[in-house]
Length: 137
Image 1 (spheres, one colour):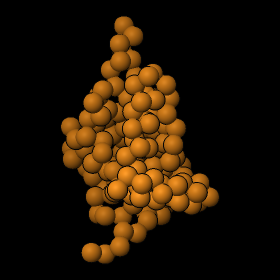
Image 2 (cartoon, one colour):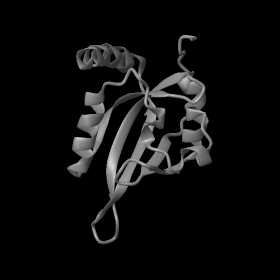
Image 3 (cartoon, helix red, strand yellow):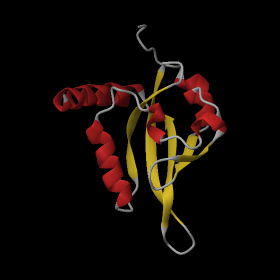
Image 4 (cartoon, helix red, strand yellow):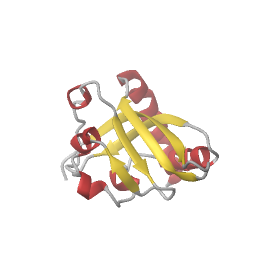
């Protein structure tokens, strides 16, 4: 199998953010055009799928466990995430995930906004994530 290669984030993002929304179980209910372009999936391929359709195997389970704990507590989560494109390439994003509420204050889902991660942050985070993944095995 060919080694996955990174995408050119600056080219793909062109100053626009990736935005997606999920229901309370993490099923995608909205994906903006930029999310589709960068992930390589069409909107129809994304809607109705679990958001982890783009999870890269290098991501530690503990990072997502912390994210879920944070957002289910009603708090904004911020972190770096390595995502896997449909074509097998990957990209790093600086991510914020926040709970969304309906007009009655009831949790209705989550919104994520992502932008390119800095090279420095990727290098630091990748090393930490490698150690975390190794400890999960």
